[in-house]
Structure formats: C-alpha cells, structure tokens
Image (tube, helix red, strand yellow):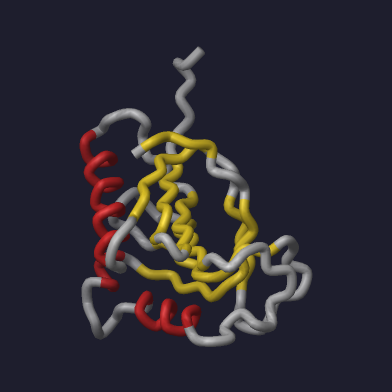
Length: 157
C-alpha cells in the first residue's frame, strides 16, 4: 500500500445501493447482477466520450464506516456526461489522497485480498485514516487498482 493523489475521474454506469450484510446473503445480493450487467458485451456501446478501455467501480455515499449502506456504480470513464443512456448514472470521483492497493492474479480473489488489506489498515487505527467518502476500483488487463480515500494529514509540512 502506498499513498497517492488519485486523479479525478467521471464515471458513467449502473448503480445499486447495498450493504455488506445484504451481499453476504445470495438471495439479497445485488452486486453479482450489477457486475453481470456491466460486463455484458456492448453494455456501454451507447455511452459517448469513453476515456479508456478500463472498467471502473465507484463505492460512495457511505451511510457509516464499515457497516452501513453504500452505493456502488460500475461503469466506464468518460470525458463528459452530457447524455446519459436510460438506466445509467454519472458520478464524479474527486481527486483526493488515497491508499493504493494493487490487485494482481486471479479475480475476484486478488481484489478481495486488496479490500481485506484496506479493512485491516482501517481497523488498526493506523494513519492515514480511511475517509469513507468515495473509493475507486480500476479494472484493467493487468488486474485492478484499488484507491481507498484517506483523510488529509494536516501535520505534514
């Protein structure tokens, strides 16, 4: 894990509001369906202004730290979101300091391990503290990069 300045990105995609508790129950889990929809061939063919070929997952609108509801948007980076296809949303992911975890190897296991590392860091109370604002996964041919937003450190000079 390293601290980086995550660049701002605009993502257009499909969204669900869920909890970790709901996702642990196959009867209530929404994320598998969200990922299936976003991963379908041509899912983003009608979205203009695609910035790259990566797939993005934005985790945002956290109700509370680890246990509350949150929104996940799975989509693509775009240059502008002037015309949204029906059923899609746009979310601007702010550029902020973030912990970067690189997930390499078989997915989704490598990404789950990266999230576990982020969770262990948050639970330890070590600096920097997790912000629980907007987190970002960037899925690319080499794996996935997980950017977990952190609170700014005001003591650094």
